[in-house]
Length: 181
Image 1 (cartoon, helix red, strand yellow):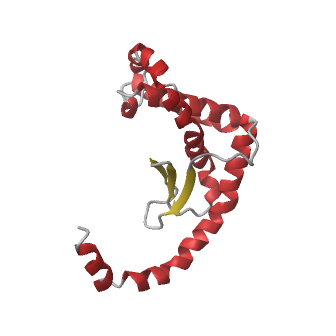
Image 2 (cartoon, helix red, strand yellow):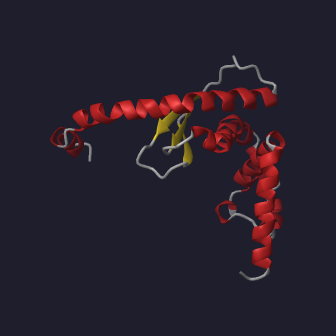
């Protein structure tokens, strides 16, 4: 693959294609800048952490203009936390998703630091599996279940108006499941 890539780059003339689309990517980043700044400011304020604190990790925001609208994904690679955002008519619509990912950035190292304690509590995973709306992607990972639960609890505390809406959706889903629909 490494040997084929340089030839592909030249034959496809990716450099000129990038020069053509780069302004659109820059524009999307500029649209996200105030939203991301607000996510960071409000989250650090909630935790009472000064905004000037420096972490030993970095966050990189990457717009993916070919992705589906309003998608937010994140991956942690060697101390760099990458957040990939799909195009948004209004980046403000992704505020909660971005805040969710930023909370992962803050809390994942803490959870990793205390994973032995969480592994001792692994028996709680069995009780969690019995819950009606237990997410299948958390079926085998108690640490991730705890992290996701903690993040959702924080988001509910920070945004009670949105939490009520989400709880209504969950209750409706549960009723549909119970009715066999």
